[in-house]
Image (cartoon, rainbow, N blue to C red; front, side, top):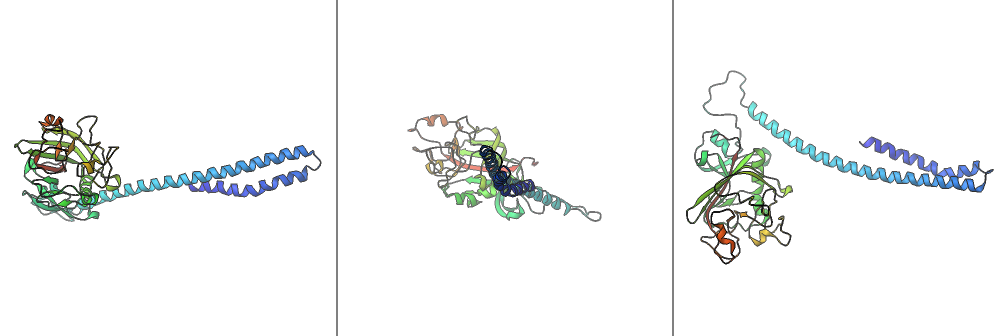
Length: 345
């Protein structure tokens, strides 16, 4: 793509001196002609010279555009290479289990070198809830997660849990990025880690909610993906089923799908007049502002005032909160957990 551009630039530079001398040559040859004819020829040659200069400017602009396109193509190549590396890693994992001679009888799967999430531990016959180490991407190291190996077929990786209000979720962008809390108690796993887990496999999300009246409901989504930090941890979520209602896409006004992550110190929401994260004292995928916020303040009982607590807008008695003076719903426990879409218990 660069050679034709260089040829045009070379022609322009070669022709310019010749065009500059053209009026002098015309004068020399046209000494017997009228002065008017010579002047007309000189004007035409000057116009040609100006046109050539304009062409050079256009060529330079095109060359800059080509360089921009080349940069975009390089980014596409990097993404393609990253995908190929992941594919090769998977092939290597499979080949590592191939025997050169007749294989011995094996009582458990051996092709998992490093579990990517809690579902891999289930395949390794681990059946107890607890903290395990996972490696969704070998290039980004290993980290601890809490695995629910008993509920609803097991294999669940928890990304968030609220139990008693001992951990504040009014945190900065950097804290939500790396995660906080204790995986055995209240915690946020971290946006970087959630991205790696949802990138490694197609994940479903299950949300478990319980209020202080003992009512338990759930919401399940067949597609759950969190983009990287460059894309501001954009949320992709769809395929609702459950009993709690789809508060993440309640109506046209409030839809958390495809929304960026916002924190009190980083405003990426759709609200034009302020920061939803600062107003509701939490980090979340706010719209303008929300019909759900599972990272809100933990209240031990129903409360009044700003709806800055844990919130799920389709809960069974939320219609009574339409008036600001009424009490607001409080939640006793919340769990957000993910599992591969193709998982078989």
